[in-house]
Length: 313
Image (cartoon, rainbow, N blue to C red; front, side):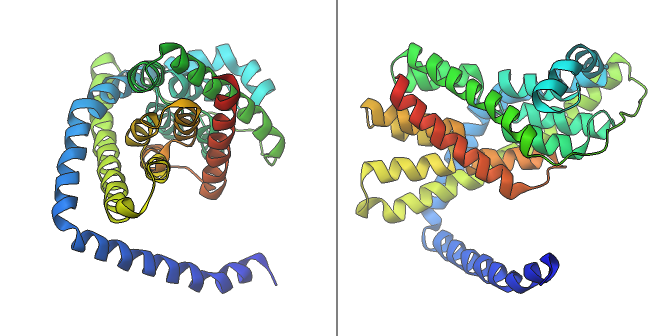
């Protein structure tokens, strides 16, 4: 039986599962419509007061940087180490730096811009998205470490754990990726400053719309599920479910547990990043492929980050 025949044979099961999930979620939202409405308001407030202010300026700056040809400079500068370490072209260095130090989904937005300009291949973008997107250092160190766990040093250790695992993941993926034909970047005329600013603001605004839609949906989904099972579950289970769906609320619930368990669950949430973040990245990156591999590796990264936190914190 060929691979295509196997996929067709298994397709009805996948469609049946999606249909059941659709009816379950629809019934859940109808039954808890009052709570869902309140959760939507809360998520929109989070977007307005936290998500957009922290991400929108970085997304605009990244867009201007790429539009003015900054990616080409980074590409030439980092071509050799990127090829040696990760088996990727130098253009991937721009995605890596923005993803590591500006937080998601800025790296994904940058990668999509480079693909549109012909400086990065879609296969390279798919590989980069697995290990180049981290929570911003400010969020991990200040919000999670100092604010939620009450120890700035813990936040620093958590970010170094994430950075180290991400670096090693990129190296390991090189050996498991199929060899591909060499990608030849296309040349594109650079825009003037005014054009670069206008296009970057427009692109960032569209990305914010997609981002906030993901935040609202998965925040409402997680809170609605928790409202149903909350009376029958432990604080640990509630925190774990929160970490799987949404990173900010998950870390806050985990931190309330205290001790090593809090640090481990926060590390898992930061490494896994939550479904809300994943769909922000998928939406922003536009050209991503091999999503099962992406989800699998991110989950393993979360497990390893939790284990490392138990040992080091």
